[in-house]
Each structure stands twice: as structure tokens, then as C-alpha cells.
Length: 409
Image (tube, rainbow, N blue to C red):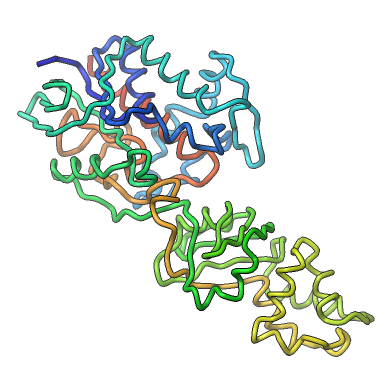
């Protein structure tokens, strides 16, 4: 039996941060992971360049049953803290739109940095090794693993969520939470492409590959509007606009897209369209294309072929009035459509739901039920927007749990 002060289960973003901080604080740390490749989810993120944080992070960028739960951890370890660490390792990076920070080179720079931080803390690696059972006698945790029996007063669960099973995602952390009496918030894929019934989507299949800027919104009553790019696919919709909306989407409910490319409602857009008809001599198709210059021609043609708009075909713009332009404006400014599903965990970037935050202490992430048991990262019911927010939650939650344990020394 090997004895440690803390055992961290999961060597992803949150687990690496937690192990490094605890080890550098003087604790004896074991870090377990069942995967042969280290932090593969970091490696594939951001197109291979890891969108490692966002300079504009706040609790408002996250969805949870308790919307304010992440506040304490995010305040304790900020984007500025992680940026300072990245600079310490001389990792070149750049800012893209909306405060997103990416590595100039590859995601491996972040993985290597975190591994070096763990080594600096003399963390003992157990990889690839699996946990077969976890027991708690009231003061110590005993883990039966493929590396033998490990024991510690503290266990940190950083095993991640369900997305991308091909790189090793499992439900280990969720099962462990239930084993020790925690409740779970229903899990579902988030930041994921949406799909539609093949019959309903047939008119749009030919638009696969078409992209344009839109405003998007999910079906939750508290869902925000996102100003992002939309991408048509053979099976439905993707792109940042839809990935963002998917986190706030509920099955059977519609998402809403404003395709005008500007913040406006249907009434205002109808007024603008009517104004644009004055003195116009073009036919409807050419005139409409001029009103939405950011739309590819294929989209204009597909749009005017919709049954409710076919009456515009061949018409002179001067003949059009509110009766014809009203439905057009409504469809552009507030296109509502009901997805049949998602592309699932194989294409999702994160999981929505997880360990119920009501069972955790927000300032430490320690279980309210089992002293010494902590949950961090994606396994917790805290889901960030697209754009580096989920990584910042990983860094912040890992740091918070590590220092909560150190504070007990």
C-alpha cells in the first residue's frame, strides 16, 4: 500500500493543475489516469492550438443549476493568473476575437507546461492505470488500482465528462459521485452541432459548407443571444453560433436564428425592407440578394424557394408590400426551427450537467457529504461558453481544490 496526502483521479486540464499546485505546496500527490496519451482533450482543442482561456471570464459565461456557484473559484484563480504562468514558460500566444487566447504553435505547449509543473511538485504519476474501487473508512480513502492499492486522506475527482469517448472519456466520476451519495444534474452533450429530421432538412442539404454571421439563441428562458458564425451541414447546423445555442437548447424546443447579420427584430427589419422597395426596379431575387449581401447566393435561392416565400418569385419589388415582406422579415430576424437531436458526445466539446453543485462547497469544491472528497472540472455541473471559458473553469477549480487541501495542513 502506498500512502499519499492527496490522490487526483484524471490527468486532464483540471487534474494537472490541481496536482501541480498541491505538489508544489508540499503535499505528497498521486496523479492517476487510464489513458496512454496525456491530456488528449487539451491536445485536440482549439484546432490543435488550445484556446486556453478568455480575458473576459465571469460567472455569467457559465450555465449551471446554481448560476453563481463558479464565482468563488473564478475569482480565486483568474485568466491573468494563467496567462502569467504561460508567459513564465515563454509560450507564444495570440488573442482572437471576443477575448479568446490561443497558442501560436501547438496545444502541446500547454500540456508540456502542466506536466513540468507537476514534476516541479514531485507528483507521482500513475499512467496508464485504472481505478477499480474506491472505499472510505471515515478518515482515509483506499483506492484499488491496476498499480496496486493507494491510500490518502483526500481524493480529487477530475475525470472529466462524457464527450469524445474515442479519446477515453468515461462516466467514472459520475458513478463515483453517486456511490458516495451525491445527486447528479441530467447530463447531455453541449457545444455540439444540431441535427434535423431528414425530410425537414432536405431543402438545405445542398447548402452544406455555407457559412454566415448570425445571432443565435437556445430555448432556455434565460438563454443569451450569441453573435457568431453559422455553418450549414449535410445533417443540420454547426459553427460557433449553433454550438453556443446548443448548450441552452432543450429537446423538442426551437432554437432561434437572426440571419440579418445585425441586432434587429422582425418589425424593424420589415420597415427597412419596405423602405428599400421604394423606387426599386429589380426582381425579388436580385433585390433580396442586395439586402443581405453577406448571404451566399445559394442561400438566397434556397430561402426564396421556401413555400411561404415562393409568391415572391418573378415579382417586381415595387409590387411588394407588408403582406409579402412581413413573413420574409419574420423568417430572417427570428427563424425558429426545432432540431431532432444533436451529433452526440462524439462531436460535443463539453458535457452539460454533472455533479450537483448543491452537494459541494463553492469556496473549496469539497463534498458536503464526504470530507476529503473533491470534484473539479467538467464532472461538475458548471458548463462554460465556447471560447476558452471551460478551460478557465478547469484551471480555477483545480487551483481552488488544491489550495483548500493545503489550507488544512
